[in-house]
Amino acid sequence: MVNLEKEAIVLAGGFGTRLQSVVNDVPKPMAPIKGKPFLTYLLDYLKDFGFTHIVLSTGYLHEKIESYFGTAYNGMKISYAYEESPLGTGGGILNALQKCQTENVVVLNGDTLFQVDYYALEQLFSQKDTLLAIILRAVEDTSRYGRVSIAEDGRIIGFVEKQNASGKGSINGGIYMLNKQLFADFSVGQKFSFEKDIMEKLYSSSSFYAYVSDGYFIDIGVPEDYKRAQIEL
Image (cartoon, rainbow, N blue to C red; front, side, top):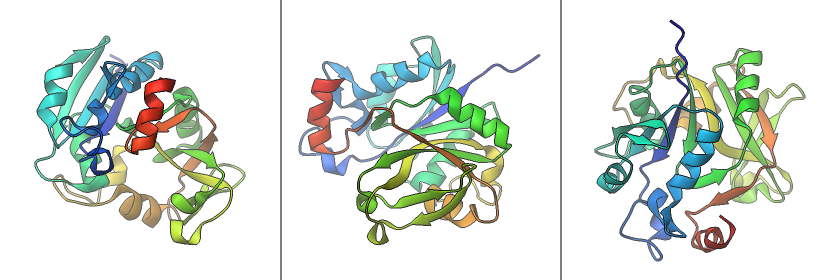
């Protein structure tokens, strides 16, 4: 029998330090936008691309997320991967992968809505037969984020730290499609960074790929953008 499950991990365990002045009684992805948690907008968008199983990686005030969504939302199955203590982005993803049935999974942040074409991400991932495909964003000034350089065929050829980056360029959009094999050298419960310990360490020895999207983007972790979301979403 063919497994038709289409799975995504949403990283929803952050403390939301920058947003504390505006929202302090719920986890950042649960911040209300026009009476609905921000996370509902993100999950509704994933539903449009055929996702059937969402794993929410939770930590701070996790019970608020669990009590709202339960085990299903908008026809999608919902599972939870709770971190008792912060595991970093890499540890959090590996912890959540234990709840996934498929080898290839999409990963995204729970406090940003980036309206990308997930079908294009899947196509790049399968065509290049890679362990990791990333969606990038084009920005006017990369100094706030750091820059990602790609070759003509989309292969990632470099990462530039934000203190050394400036001007127009492409930045990591925080959306990945990955294969579980990427985590072969790490243990469940280990704290590590996906960006530093996997992407930036392995891109030169492995072939990772990326494409640039100009889709709508908003990060509600910043108070100004949280206010903007109230108008735009």
